[in-house]
Length: 257
Image: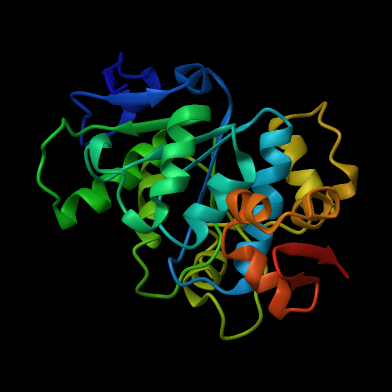
């Protein structure tokens, strides 16, 4: 059920204040260390795979992974971290926007936390999508921009992070890919994550990160071969793993190769 909650003190540093905050789910997640993971809606398989791995490791370590509930990187971040994830929506919580993520957002409302500054019945506005990013950033101890082109809206999150003094991190990419994050590194505004385990330990020093190499999707599918269960947990990443030759789908069963 949607309810109004006290505005966290972390949001007081915003130049554009949050006047009301609505929630569905586990508000205790707001007391955890938070790391934001954001990026392109039309992301590369590599970027979504890295996002899923990192968010899973952070979630397993008790860190709250925060994102915007959108397609692509956002969805991969939320799925990997469940139930330790917070989705900040650009619409009122009754809409579960975007519709393509409705099942995922419903699960976050039940097991994680949905947040919005918009009351029920508020019309959808393009500008609200930008404003949403400031809350994602302000709640976080670090922002990971997994992939962004030079004109990507995800770079607005970088601007908010610089305003709020929140450190920015990016994944390593090949030349010509994710030129927006490459520009952040070139300008000394972001640091490249070279080791997932070392990154997680910055926020959860006692975490058992297994060297940062465990693939949570493959581990899950090895124990849960039902296709529907795998899709519920990881969504379209299942089909991407099939295309890359990591798993085989036969009927309604999944087999790790």
